[in-house]
Length: 139
Image (tube, rainbow, N blue to C red; front, side):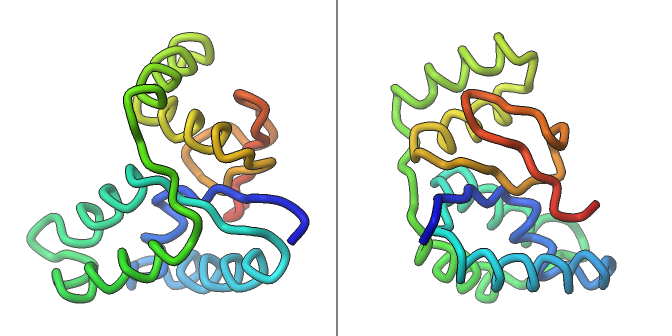
């Protein structure tokens, strides 16, 4: 394993998004490739967001039992526990980088895990935040 890569919620959610077949296939390809090259990292925030994303709305992407299985599978990656220190770091990052608190918390988690990169479509590709390079795997 050459480095640690943080996986944001949207990459995992696309695995279940039937309305986005290209992104669904790309997410699967990315996760398979990256798991061979790097240590994959998520946070407890990502696990929580994934469950909500998969089960919300009138036509959810997945029923609760499948969503739970998705969380259990993602929990096999390295999981960073969000604690008070990370919340405070997330606030600082969100203020300094002018991000939402939730994106700041994701970046704080990735930085605390020593990740070199984060795979997400929510931030600006190529940007470096808290020492972590942002990559959008869908462009």
